[in-house]
Amino acid sequence: MYDEVHRPRFHFSARQNWHNDPNGLVYHEGRWHLFFQHNPEATVWGNMTWGHAVSDDLVHWHQVEHALHPDDHGTMFSGSAVVDELNTSNLGHETLLAFYTAAGNHVEPPKPYTQCLAYSADSGDTWLKFDENPIVPWIEAHNRDPKVIWHSPTRSWIMALYLADDRYCLLRSTDAKRWEQIQRISLEHDSECPDFFPLSDDAGIERWVFWGGSGRYLIGDFDGTVFSPCSEVQTCEYGSNGYAAQTWSNAPKERCIQISWMSGGRYPEMPFNQQMSFPVELSLRGSTDNWTLCRWPVKEIELITASLDVSVSASIEKEAWPVPVAGELFDMTFELSAEIGSKVVMTIRGVPMTFDFEQGTVNFRDCEVPMTGTGLLSVRLLIDRTSVELFLDGGKVSASFCYLPDAHIDPLVFRLISGNANLDRVQVNRVDDVWRVVR
Picture (spheres, rainbow, N blue to C red):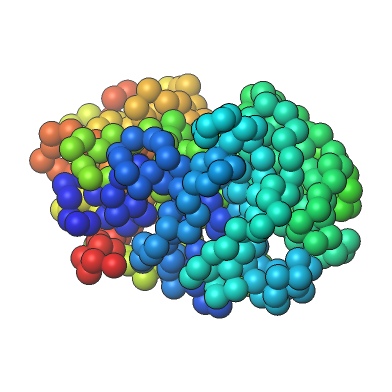
């Protein structure tokens, strides 16, 4: 267990069987909690249950007992968790509250999707379901995926909830049990898995981000009652495999930490199926009416990396140049400078990633990721056995990919296809195998 040929080595994956969306992300008493959609019985989707893992450092994860099991209201679909520091729910100070969708039409006789509450008085070790569930009755369609936050200025809980098509809503409560709908929101070309959180921009002004399942988002203001968008819909996730991202609640030092399901990966003949992304920290660059949501791997990755002492500054030639490293797990940064019309291919464990300075895109596995400028590109890559995560220009553009390596001798190879290009500021870090000690 944890030593299988296609097991991700520094990304979370369930011990066995299927998993998908991250759920109930909450930090409490020194522990990061990661709940996740899980089928305890098979490597395919179904029988949705909340799996549970904990970490002291966002890097090493220990899977523990399942938290929420299907019941008469349905199977356990996605949701979120918070710390009730003020005992607004009257369930106890510092009680953890989990909000989830009971997918009712998966039981007999069929029931509608509703939103329910569970709570833990022992820092997440055991969970009880609220005996007056559901707390939010069916609204429409397959309404689901409640993301709850605390809004201090109005001393109220705010729930972002998916409705149908590209439509969401906000609800409010003062006790986490009784909810009123306060606003409808549309997020064009997105659906499912909302998130809603504040970030300060470069001017130090608090803005609010409304996020959808595919990584599209709006920036706006929120007064506790109305979310007022100040931007058009923007895209944060440009990869083919990033989905259902969620931020941790109650994170220390007001950090905004996010993790995604890397949807659609292939893990042939493995006892597990699917993986999570590596956690990233979010920041909001820009001000006034020009903002960009940036993602960057959390600093805790330094606990498992060591420099391979690669120092390169040279022109890239048409003859393939292997980076002088060995292995399969890398955290790599470099700069590419090129004239318009140039094209560079970097082969990652046998799979090509093309930097096309004519089209202004980075291409990997039939997916085009836009460059943020022309001529100079800063790149960071997290490379695991079955995934590549790409960050451009300090995280202004990010993309998540699953892949299986192809035949290769050298793990990282550069080759010029056309034009002229230079490679500078190359740093390659080896990443440790976090499962070397089974956790």
